[in-house]
Image (tube, rainbow, N blue to C red):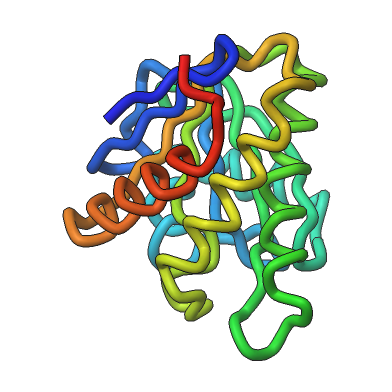
Length: 183
């Protein structure tokens, strides 16, 4: 699924975040220490190799909502943007902290003049954020930010499961139906 909004394409696809060769940057749903973990962080760190962990470790710890950028090493991308999402029910206010993840990732992408970026569904795994609620936060933040983007032209959401992909498709359609952004 692809939607064009003011010259920026938002695409939803099912797949492995660590295998997005058509994107300059991928986003890691990181832990505070920026180390290998489970889920997205495990996939990205394993594919990138130990150099990623070495570089990222020097930037740790980060707080919920923060983002940092590293090289991508053995990944098919140039950069990895590491975001620490909120733990649902623990880090408050969850929606603002999650929105900050997306805002800060977009800001870093613009600073590096990145034209394409792949995001996972931050905080929806072990951090327990409900997928539908997280999708609403992400897409609302993307749409709010589009007018300020100069370099970023492709925002890709990579969902691991078909169920999560379908939820994200539905949420994006609902948000866009209430807006006049479709191009």
